[in-house]
Image (spheres, rainbow, N blue to C red):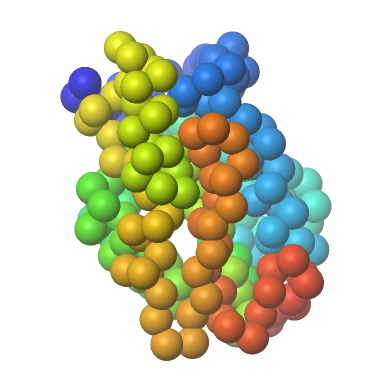
Length: 224
């Protein structure tokens, strides 16, 4: 299946929320809201923090962070999706840009207390996805955390099993992360990368400084 472009997501914007709720059993959206809730738990206390949402879509992920007092900056390549997110989070900042080209230039001088992404990065090829996550990590303020929630798997076997179960529903045009392969590529000096499987086809990947554990809700200072 050919991946959708921005116009495809524009067309989907009006019923995206309903669509993911109606397809919450099995691949690809099983456990969708459990996964998003886990991201919020890992971010922790976000009052007064500036949080970047990569592939913000209609804002389903960052809306809860916004409600808790975060300043949300959202990036997406779909103007219609951004319109929905903007209406839900007045006062937020939204940038229309293709993440396949990296972080938008207007955000490159900002440090973020947390950077999150929900069900967006699987549209990028694996090398480009890893490069974007490394770039995002460099934009974290001290003590910040990067949390990527997506269709993903712990092992290649888990990926293969899901593909077999999904049959004709499986989308070969997407690039789903296998944690066992991605973590060694992302890990570096001073960086801890971990992965947690939430449903049969989705989980969260967390990158942080080795001295900071998101489960302890480390506080950071935004210098953007």
